[in-house]
Picture 1 (cartoon, rainbow, N blue to C red):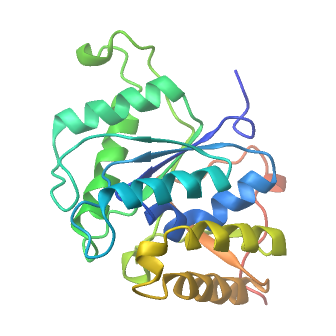
Picture 2: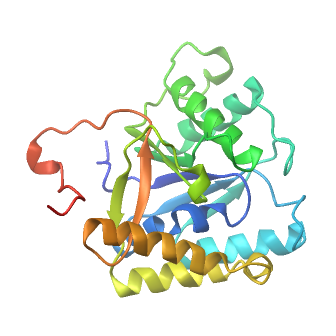
Length: 240
């Protein structure tokens, strides 16, 4: 079995651009280290005020390619229509079983954000659990798979959970920040309407300042992190 360090990241996004804005710095950091990612987008931004579904699909595809990621689109209920359905959970669990990732990223399930974001976070959490149930009849054609860890990313400050201590990923390398910025700027239909890029870079600078580095991005673990040794636990962000 491949180690978590060599297995691709599986990243779920509700709309084109959410992955890049919410955790693109982390994807860029992993890409710089040689780790691949696979994006699963659950709409094409049909309800957006800016950009057509065709334009946004192209932007997402080009941005993923820039980050060295593969991408697929799944049809659920459409932009701004996503509902919590068992059928959706099964479809996402099928993807998890097919790709067999160690690490899965999804948007947080905090309610005070676009409803698709929170609902997708809940669906992915349920799908990760169902993917490991060997007797689940709708998935019997695929071998059960248990992921190592599910992390949530926050697309905006309002989406950050108040009851989970985040882990911070150092993305301070200039080439990583540059790659992330380029990936965000690929979503021109959105960045032309609002300065999303500077908002995300400012968030990363503030998180970095908290840890005494230039830039950081936050992830929120669904489960307690398990380390084989304290030597693997990294260092605390608080600068005493």
